[in-house]
Amino acid sequence: MTEPALVHQLAEVFEFDSFAFAHLSDAERAVVLARRAAAQPRTDHSWSKLEWIAQTDKRDALRICARLGLHVHLLHGVDDRGRCTCGRKTCTGKSRGKHPINDGWEVAPFDLNRVDFGLIEDPRRNLGVRMGPQPGGYDLICIDIDGPMTLLEPLEARFGKLPPTLTATSGNGFHLFFKWPSGVELPSNTKLAGVKEIDVRSRRGQVVIAPSRHYSGRSYKWVRCIEPAEIELE
Ligand SMILES: [Zn+2]
Image (cartoon, rainbow, N blue to C red; front, side, top):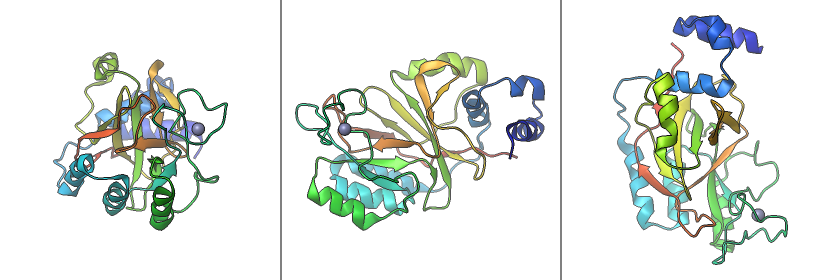
């Protein structure tokens, strides 16, 4: 679908002023759509099992996430001094312990055994979830906030409050996960509404998950273990 066609369709669906909507960035549109996420109560309580991950190791976490239909993959980890286990001299910045081990991860099928063997080989390795279509039959996006939740306040003042959704803490911020309509393209790694601390991760993007270790020494944690809020285009 071409970009103007998508904008027109979304504007029609939401009765937006299509001219104004066309001038939002894709990431800003994501906020508008998230605001309009379905209000009906979510009934799939199996997501509460993510609470167990605080007491488990990465191999158990992998199984819990796989049962929830998430596409989990292997990332390089960090050692006790915060160095990336990829061993590259150039890997010194924010990507430490966050980048996928296998080439072609963007399109590789989910393979629980391969990830499990990878954790046995080196337990320091981290886990990530690839955004976009999941084995569970839904698409995911993540709003990645590099800092406190208050960074969302100006956006929520402008677009409305985001619905309660699956939430994790990262090394120094938060990850908010949403179910996203299949087939609607949203560019990944885009700054949200020009806020430099907030990124949108979508298809061809990925997010580190609990109980992975951040280079700061802190672990990622699930803090709101509910089904991701669904963004519906109807
Ligand atoms: Zn690295």
